[in-house]
Image (cartoon, helix red, strand yellow):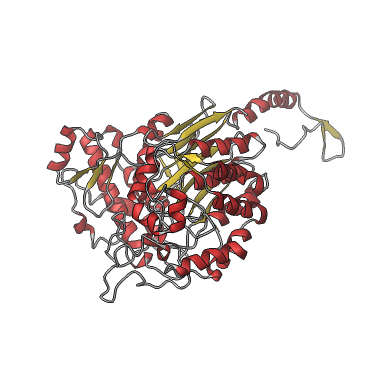
Length: 577
């Protein structure tokens, strides 16, 4: 086929200097190519844009930006900022996250690492008492629990290097939401009730998120004028408006006055990092996952490598669940032992992701008996508190982003006069080897606290691509995020619709505690009994978990699907504009 940029040759020089005409067949081929080119070009772009996020106001904010000429990356800035306003229990300007980007113009794929960092004054044992025991609540409540936020730096970076629109325009919907407010729903009330004591302990947080010191009633409108002012400063001055100047000094003063260790140089020194995503393959699909300090990509691909060794679709239900659980157990064991911030820790990633290692792990799986997690100890080799959104624009650019402030409402602390709710991501470090964090995850020295270090995360924004289509997915859920993405991904590979991925019943094993966590109604009584016979311990949870947001471009039918998890109150929208 001729070059896309070349005209067909009308003549060419022969060795003797004479001119030879192009053959007749060439002209026929060229005319056919001209006829086919528009169709091929059209098939290379999705017929619609789509956004799925955990809150209708955030989805609409992203759609507004797309419809005013922005691309998927501008929309990602708008959605992230809007979620910081309307989902204070899940994300915020005082938190961080990972933004997985695919730019269609040159095929560039990159993870924008906006993960929080430990303050420079942080120490290895800062949450232990004089006897070396963890101090209850020290890494969860109040500003001592807060890492240096990365969200604002990430949004400014994405806008400058990947967007079409000025940052001011992309932040406008969030500023409007902060001024006009949003209505409290039952989910907000449940999260606020869970963190009521922490919110009450911060006068600024209590004014911002409670009513008279109590959980607000349904329909109560939360207006955040201080946050609107902060967003406007960022819109006018960019990242420097947050990490330097009056706002930075105000945050540091408030943090230090209430027992935190931030300094102005912590904020000035913060930088986002562009990281190469973790890439693997599963049954003909290319999987693009989050890089460290997210454990998501490594753990997901380690599980997929083991699953690829068996035909799990041909297995009976009990065998399939048993094998999946044993795969989860082994991958999470490696997460606990090996993974941390790659800028600080050397890790055997090549081996962990190799087919040979997958075969070694899989060879230890018995199909008739569960392997007690304690037996894996010498083998050599995050919930309701996070948010996710998926975006596809009509050019084919795409974003999968998972953001967090860790536990619901983060540290519960708002820096006076800023409206910025701070994270409690320091709890994601291994405070002491073998001691579980708030999600029951244990860690080792690889994830120990160090000044300027990023804490390990489970956030797993993911792309899945083949000739059949392109999937964009992710979810909140603390330590259960990676297994939820795995279950959704397997549904996509089996050809099910995006709506099915987000509705799929969920189960989870994370090595320790040694139990299968199960959503209510996910396992039949017969299945439960069969798993117990094999030695599994089941923990049936009172509530479902996760809030998956997914977009799928079906290339075969050239159709776009968007789906928002019915467990949450999100919104998925398609737009032909």
